[in-house]
Amino acid sequence: MKNRFAKHLVLLFCLTMVALSCVDEYTIPEETAIEYETEIVIEGRILAGEESVIHLSYTTPINSEEETTDILNAQVYVIGQNGYRSEAAKFNIEDDCYIIDTRTLENNTLYAVEVTVDGDTYQSDFQPLLTSPEIDEVTWQENESSVSIYVTTLAEEDDPRHFMWAFDEDWEFHAEVDMRGNDEIKPIYVKEHYPDLTKTRNPYLYCWMHDVSRNIHLHSTASLSENLVKNVKLHEISIEDIRISYIYSILVKQWSLTDEAYSYYNTLKRYTEESGGLFTPVLSDYQGNIRCLSNPNKRVHGWVLASSVTTKRIFIYEENFEHLRSQYSNPLCIAKHRSAHKDEFNAILTPYPPLSPWVIMAVDANWQNDPNAIVYNWFCVDCRYTTGATKKRPDFWPNDHE
Image (cartoon, rainbow, N blue to C red):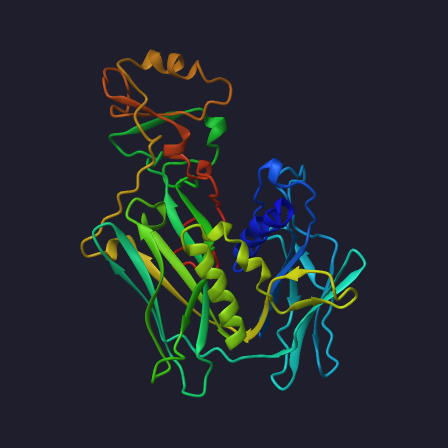
């Protein structure tokens, strides 16, 4: 029983995480993982007109010394009943998944994913490419403590009735202190740390960040008289989140699902959201649409869907809020020291040589008699020090900040 329960714990977590993103490893107590046998998890999306994405992993017991459960040595293809066979998938090391160029898939045949790893060959069920209707709109609404994101899709009556969404997020944020200063405020800093800073240019002020959705977002109109998805909530962002501190963008992606795929993902979603769902043992017995061709008795888990994808992007600007104002602030951006005399500059930096990126903002440009010179740490003046930040502005960004 311990062995079976161990499988259930890890499997449910793996299936949940690969549903929309790459797999994170979950660890089971050592005493529970006795005689544990790994099983393969295959999850992905065959996408017409886009690159298909396939995630492969092993279920892993908690006492494993391996740093990852991802499978890196597989041969992965998209195949069609008409004899189509894609080029071999390429492994994307940044996202821990296999990428296949399927932009030329035709709608008049059925497709499946074929995976060969460790001497065994696995295949998903052949299925048609469903059509995803256009997204009518992505909207947002503010309240006292957050911003909520909604999606609306008006489909035709003969379109699929089950929908699934994921999203990409990008946002611009600023360092809380602009080191350029002005006529009244003079920055004093170690030049080697900020070599490109001038009076008119501050390349350490603007940064960007990126994230992806990690939950399962589903909706069905099967029980409705009209095939209308109206204001389904996808996301909520706290007023204290850095995402909405300046400019925020969300790209919503939509797929259509078959009845079987919707049932599978809805079951997965329900089990993970209900109390104790993560540890419910029943779901591991719920079969996906993957099987092992070389060993029919071998257990394999996951689901591969096939659909076109439709997308819509919006931007949200902090200044457009009617009532909401971002309350994000970096707790490290606090004045660390107040100096009365210019000769204290070296004393302030001495505890942090030779890599001190501390910056002094002096109210008096001469800093002779200024009692209000403030020392800020690097998190306040250099956006690059925020975890996950990049200086690479997205190609679609609406301004030319550098």
